[in-house]
Image 1 (tube, rainbow, N blue to C red):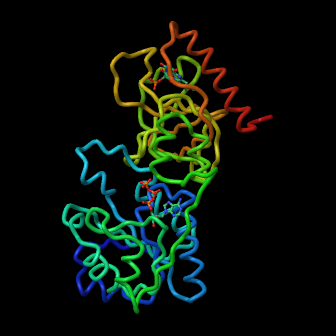
Image 2 (image 1 turned 60 degrees about the vertical axis):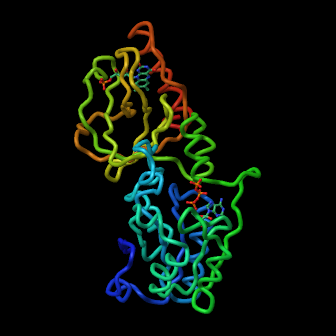
Length: 315
Ligand SMILES: Cc1cc2nc3c(=O)[nH]c(=O)nc-3n(C[C@H](O)[C@H](O)[C@H](O)COP(=O)(O)O)c2cc1C
Ligand SMILES: Nc1ncnc2c1ncn2[C@@H]1O[C@H](COP(=O)(O)OP(=O)(O)OP(=O)(O)O)[C@@H](O)[C@H]1O
């Protein structure tokens, strides 16, 4: 898959370089959940049928990251993750339009004439509630009108689970409320974080549970503070463990920035500076303050047993 960054307005040179008959799925697509997958896989299928490249046209940063007051809560799929997942879906070209204040003021008409039509998109695939242009003034009907005669518009029906529309905002809420099960079922996979292992306070090994401290590689949505059963991808290995997302109230007061500490089962090697991808399989319990270190150690032992049972580890 090729990734191409586009800026508004697209220059004639850029347009000439990428113009070709192609099918493109349009949207923000943060999270690449099952609703997004239904839009994107229909674009890929249509492209294959027509013998043209399958493209995804998206935006970065997220409009809320640009327009907010510096309080954006993060990405479910930061750029690297988006690329990895889209490539695995069979997408050939990922166009990333740089989102900024100027783009936020572009009318739906100008967006289509300046950014879509010059690429010679033969079919645009969008979800039923796709909105675009200044204040989301453009909708599916307007897209059809603006593309008339040159660009078909295919509309994916709502993708629902138990009657609810699967959405990025719903997943964000679930992760922040400890409802990982719902988030993962809407994703159609486990939520994951990625990062390199940094140095912690080196207390873990003294309490019998050494932990790898993950420094997140991007601005991920932070799941609620607590303990998770995790599956960890390290080089070509798959490892299992428990992760605490939190501020360690047993040892500190007033820490605001959470740490991500992973204790891996039956692993004893040096992980400093290594990259880990950590899949959150199940939420075990909220983080809490213990009266003694002994009580914390007993609880971590129980957390590990719970995680092993959940993941069928060494049974
Ligand atoms: C599975 C697990 C659960 C944990 N739960 C808590 C908790 O509920 N409260 C807490 O204060 N610390 C908790 N911790 C964090 C430990 O306090 C921490 O791992 C220990 O202090 C070592 O951290 P450090 O070596 O990075 O400083 C947990 C750690 C793990 C691995
Ligand atoms: N559940 C769904 N069913 C069908 N299409 C969807 C669904 N969710 C999103 N889409 C479509 O995918 C594209 C990207 O949408 P967008 O990223 O705004 O999704 P979202 O999950 O609804 O986000 P948010 O919750 O932040 O509003 C759009 O074309 C949208 O219509």
